Length: 259
Image (tube, rainbow, N blue to C red; front, top):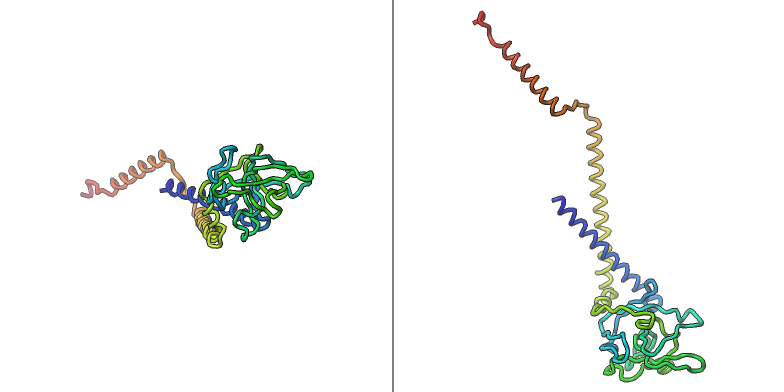
């Protein structure tokens, strides 16, 4: 029973730690996304793919092949904080702020597409982007400044010569649900409330057990001292008492004269 209880407590503690880690990660992603427009965890970003424009990848270039509902992890760039932004080449996959084809009403958003053309205009390098899935991205992306963007619009990179991102298939809906009000409550606030209640109950139980142990210790301390006998001494004591009882029996028996 004790072994089962110990295993159960270990499993519960592991689950609690996992839930807290996930809750903390999601909370950080949600907070950083709202403050800066893109999630940022130690220089990396988690992005939910919102369309199938990159589904199938490219026959000419590596990387890509992610679709709606996937989650991709890229590396944050520092192009907006430097006078010498990174340079990219044709075939790289980057995340930039732009407008998807046919979605002008949605305004500017984060798009992860491949660079299909690189040019230099007025001493500045500009990039043209497009999704690999030509059935969806039939034309290059249209942005606020035309079809080409500068490196200052690129906020993250997913696949370049010095970095290869990570794709987690099919968990985008879960991530979006967690970022909703209901999901945030069920997956973050509720587990944290349960965790604190669990810790509080454990503290109360430990306090009660501690008090009981202290009371028992006080009782033992105040109890009169009784001599402790070893097994050998106990056997000798038994033999002594047996002899004493035998002698007492003989002394109580009537003599022949009395009879």
